[in-house]
Every structure is written in structure tokens, then in C-alpha cells.
Amino acid sequence: MIRAALGLVALLLVSVTAFAAELRGTGDLGVVVERASGSVLIVDTSAAKRLARVEGLGDISHASVVFSRDERYAFVFGRDGGLTKIDLLTASIVKRIVQAGNSIGGAISDDGTLVAVSNYEPGGVRVFDTKTLDLVADIPAVYGGTGSGKGALSKVIGLVDVPGRRFVFTLWDAGQTWIADFSGGDNPQLTKIGDIGSYPYDALVTANGRHYIAGLFGEDGLSHIDLWQDKPEARRILDGYGRGEAKLPVYKMPHLEGWAEADGALFLPAIGRHELLVVDSRSFEEIGRIAVHGQPIFAIARPDGRQIWVNFALPNNDTVQVIDVPSRRIVATLKPGPAVLHMEFAPRGHQVWLSVRDADRIAVYDTTTFETVAELDAKKPSGIFFTARAHRTGL
Image (cartoon, rainbow, N blue to C red):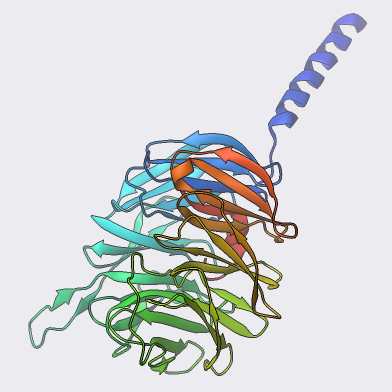
């Protein structure tokens, strides 16, 4: 009897040990988009290793990712209109829907209950329940038209979440920014702000959810909206920042979502220029420029704000430069490999991960020494997203 009991205890201990070995926290997990194969890698950011590959995500050639508040689930927005919910702990697809014909990103509400998708085809925003992916609201981006005319549908860009269960997004064709307020329930109150400028191509929101800035492809300047105003309105900032100089070729549009805020300033990639624009974060006036290696795509700040890391469009997309914020000098020029598409800092900034698409790898750098500390194989990697984003507004 005693021997049998001891055997049972031993068996239970082995079972518990085996189960415990598979327990994993979500705080050091991340997702790497493999854009050509419709798959994502789930990675351990502390150990700098791959954990699993999840396939069957459709066209993710321009995919982005947001996370649930508990960091367990990733929501992947595909270019084919696909919205996929992935369980990071089981490395499996929970649910996938194709909600539109062509989408360009999304956001998750501050309370974690709503996930919104911005669409090119048809134009507008669709909002879903994060648990079930059931449709909650359909917001067509209709503009123009008079009387009984319905007007046209606009492509939607620059979709972000802001506090108060709200989403902000911009209409490419209409030159408008809309605020969809879900604080009163699932039928949103819409605020429409017109005349923000010609062909807004991307947008950002500051970490406190107050300032929304849209870049303008059709005009030489940017549009700024203070969302804390009782009646928000657009005002032009950096008007004519390229005045008097010919634009350089634009091989890829800069990503204003890949901007940096540090030391009381915003560091923004300038369209058609080999420069970062430095903007005072209170007055929104230009206070400087930093010449860089090429047309910047992303300019992102290390979490402590001491450094800005910048990558570039063709033909300079094998290069990354590091800017020291206090001096605004370039302190490192790195050559990770062909087609560096995206960068993501470890939550407290001791490392940065770079996707090197045409070398089929992820390169991990120490942000103090600028040395490569790890490399991971990946199939044509692009976006890198860590679960720490779950707790940051606008990401």
C-alpha cells in the first residue's frame, strides 16, 4: 500500500513537473510577420529564440499586429482584409475572418473589448468584439454627395486608439479626420473634422492620446489635431518645410506611425527628404533637422528616449542609423543586411530587433554596444511586434 502510494506521488510529481515546464508568461513574447508565406513566428524576446510558426494568415504583405490586454492574443491585420486572432500560448489560430477586400491596419480599444480595422476596399472602418470577432459596428467612410446623393467611399488610413473607448482615423480621398466614440455603447458617436489637407497618407498619436498628426502627400506640411479640445479642429504645422528645394524621389512612403518622441521633441521622417524633422512637442514648431543616410521610413525612440533608430527606403535599405538625442548627432551607422523593414525595442530598450527581409533573418542588437547579439532565421520577415505594446496608447 505504501509503495503504491509513493508510486502515485512520484507519478503526480512527474506530471506536474512536465506541465510546469510548459507554463509560460506572455510578457516576453512577440510576433514576427513572415510576409511572403502568410505566416508569423512567435518569439521569446528574453531568450531571443523562435518558439513556433503559425501559418494560414493569407496576404500579410503589409500586416500589422495589436495585442489583447492580457497579452495572450495577437490580432493580425492582413492586406487581403483578413483579421486573425492568434493564441500566443498555444501557437494556434483562434478565429480568422475576411472582413473586407483590402485593409491597411487596425487598433484595439483601451478597455480591450473592441478591435477596429481600417479598409481601403471598401472604404471605412469595421469594429469587432475581441472575444468572438463578431461585427459590432460598420462605419463607411462616405464623403461628398449632396441632397439624396450618397457620395463616395474613401480609403482609410492612420487608425489609432485613444482613451475613452475611441478610435481616430483619416480619410485619404476626402482629406478628413473622424473620431468614433464608443464610450456610450456599440453605436458610435462620430465627429468629422474636414479640410485637414490633401491626401493624408499616415498618422500618429502621442502617447497620452492627445495629439493626432497626419502627414500630407499632396501638400508640403502636416495636419495637427488636439483631441483634448471640446471641439477638435485641424491646424497646419510645418507648412512648407521643403520650400525652395526639389523633392527627392520617394520610393516608399515614410511611416508616421514609426515616429519618435523624446526629450520634449518629436522626430518625424520627412517625405521626399533625407532628413528627420525635429518638432517641439508643445508648440509643434520646427526646432531642427537631422540629415540622415536616405529617405527615412521609421524613426523610433528607445524606450528611455536617449536614442533614435532610423531605417531607410531603397536604395539605402541595408542601413540603420542611430541618433543620440541630447546632441542630435549620428553615433552609429550599421549595415544589418538587405531590406531592413522594421525595428522593435525590447520593452526597456536594452536590445532592438531588426527584420532583414532579403537575408531571411532577424538581427538582434545591443543598444549600448551596437553589437549583434543574436540572429534568428525567418521567412522574408517584415513587421516585429512585442506584447509590451498591449499597454501603450496608439500602438
